[in-house]
Length: 179
Image (cartoon, rainbow, N blue to C red):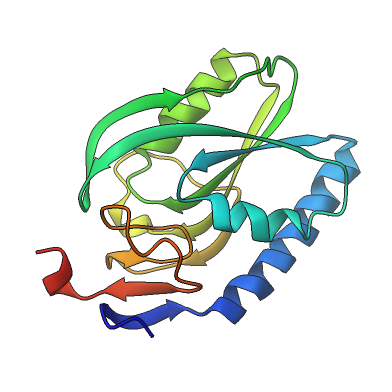
């Protein structure tokens, strides 16, 4: 375990197992409707989850990326900025938004609204983590890996000042590392 981690909240094995379950569920639901999703990953945090998840989606999919920002340090600043948008039209497409964590809900609300305005037929959300105690906007993921308590987490894509993304688990960062 990394010396700056207080405890492991979600193990690498649990992430692998839950990603397989989510992949199976997504495959079944989209296949039943005859839909092919475009997985839109929110950079940078969702990349490890995207890579793990798509291995378990047993149907043709496409994926693309968006970069958005709404955090400074440990806090959501409430102002969502689109840094990198999609390079293609999504008119009439079925979007599966891939996120690392649903926290305040601000980012997902704005990105979802943007995708609908661009003509997406449907937008669903799959998130590795959900932290409902921090929600300030009424939005929920359609598929959730793990519901977690209000602790500052890093690893498996989640960062603090761009560090800790490469940890193979989700851990709680020691308070002294960010206070």
